[in-house]
Length: 354
Ligand code: ADP
Ligand code: MG
Image 1 (tube, rainbow, N blue to C red):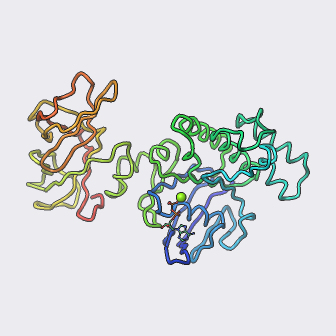
Image 2: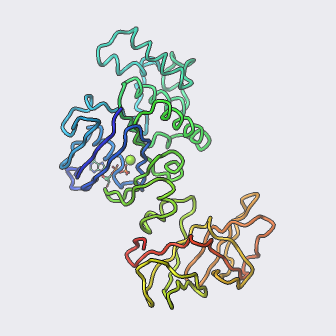
Image 3: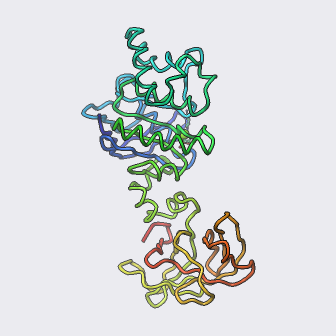
């Protein structure tokens, strides 16, 4: 197995788009690494550049002990699974899985053997004689994975492998993928635009924007201490609440509320900042509770056992405060939302975490 080292990598398309922009990245041997970011931020290009399917304009890529920047895709020791799986439609499942061996001139028996051994662990055993069109999306995805594994690669590159599955299958495939990666211990780079997928699967996440990595960390780090408003907005099942705030007498003031001293932060009286608080860290308290932000209930969304409440307050809108269904406040009433101690984040005028 092998880690991946990327230094000062740029990939510029002929039309001038810098899809990967002077990027440095180290992925450890055996790591399950997620590249996360909005559409167009350069995830696919980075993956294709690692695979050698796009030529970089600057920088180096090293896989294991070998610098592969100018090496042919087939000789880099990587296998890539594409978003649309790219199965060969006229071939059976067994032939698709055995295809990498066929390309290398290995025998029919060897091809059949690899198809049988990989398909067993991937719940494909009964499907070897079918063609891709006769399979469900989840099955096609597993065939694409089996074929990638059959390549005997040291690095697995997965470009949004779950995005073509419906919600229920996606959840199943997620669990399955995690288990498979753990069993194989294969270095895996997983591209997704779905933050929940990245948080659930990855050992570490790189959040990308405009061809660059904006933050790199464990799922917990990226979730709890987003480096910027951009990352904060991108991670979380509901976006982080961001409110205008000002520093008054060494305390953060949001709307009518004093929310404590920002210990150790480089702020002084009169500074305008943005206060960020995840909905998960807010609870509703009786009106006027100290340390809370008061606002008028604007929407209440029933989720079955709980309800999501949104408030309009002086600094902005607070969304996604969860309350038990029986505690739903009436729309138009004034309530107070109290942040859990220590969960308030402050961002400067440029949107960087203070
Ligand atoms: P993502 O996978 O994150 O959605 P891509 O890597 O596909 O992003 O694209 C990054 C940027 O490069 C986008 O601005 C996209 O329009 C551009 N791009 C992608 N492929 C090409 C191409 N073949 N030629 C020119 N520009 C491209
Ligand atoms: Mg893409």
